[in-house]
Amino acid sequence: MSGAARPAAEAPAELDLGAAPETEARRDKAPGAFRTISEVSEELDIPAHVLRFWETKFPHLSPMKRGGGRRYYRPADMSLLRGIRTLLHDEGLTIKGLQKVFRERGPRHVAMIGDGEAPVVGEPPEGPDDEPEATTAFDAPAAAMGVRLGAALGPVIARLERARASLAG
Image 1 (tube, rainbow, N blue to C red):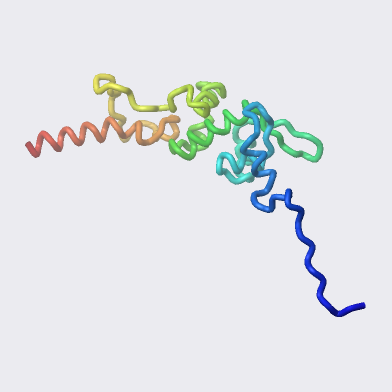
Image 2 (image 1 turned 180 degrees about the vertical axis):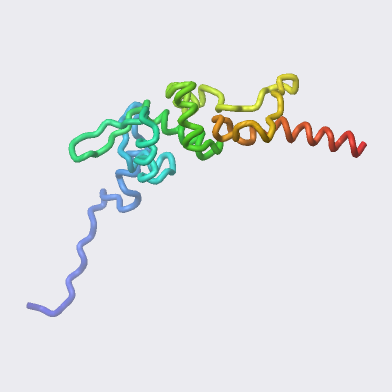
């Protein structure tokens, strides 16, 4: 036996040691393909434990479960999750506010929001003539009404700005 160092074995030329192949496969997955919780978590930038928590709060969200409890999210689940994420994270609804949206408008509406096919709940009206009446301090909190806070306060702020302009000018 010789004490000389042996040359390290080289990786085959066709082996790509760069990005993990599963990451590449996730990006190339067909829109209709089922996704694991880790793929959903990565795609929506939501931790897996939050996705599992949402399943307890929104019964319409129920991924298919295989042996060992492994979750597989269908395309319809993905639309629903995108809608839930939009309403909770981007629009500032509370869990209770979103549950009210589910009761009043149904899961299809939330999924359509996730797909960009429906307006966000409580979006402000398009024109100034369609401006709703201002909410008062005695009204229910905007989050409990299932309305995003900016939409509820938008008309009030607009009126205050007009009043400021008339006082200044």
